[in-house]
Image (cartoon, rainbow, N blue to C red):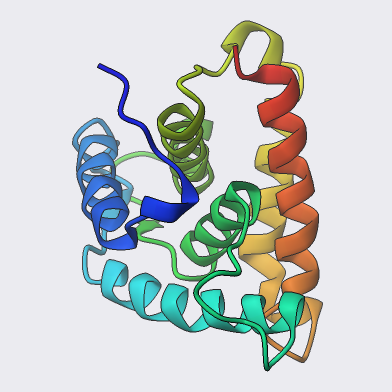
Length: 182
């Protein structure tokens, strides 16, 4: 059943519940020799989301007109969620004593989780699925970009909240939705 979904009935609380269930599923299949799940990070992401969402609206629309009627498009919403999950990772990858190196899916668990977040939101909004076969060529580059941001976001810009990355990532989200969601 397709649920009519638009920016008018967007509910971030519903999405955080969904993201938490998604993270629990990802963690269930993760290599527990290396991965620690920090469930409490969702509270931090939720708190920062509310703050950043308001700040982006002010940045885009201006202080006086950043009201409830002015909405961010889904690409910026997806970009903001991804950005926050990278700044406040819910999975920690650690070195284990029993195995020398984790596999790449474990090393990039936060980035892969962010791709799942993106797929979930786009599926809900557009009722389309990611064309995985065609996206495979671009996926490693996107994961590299996300990993680079996760590792270096505090050095990128001395003035948070790093809107330049949010806007750039929103353009990438548009590209993905346009060319890889079928």
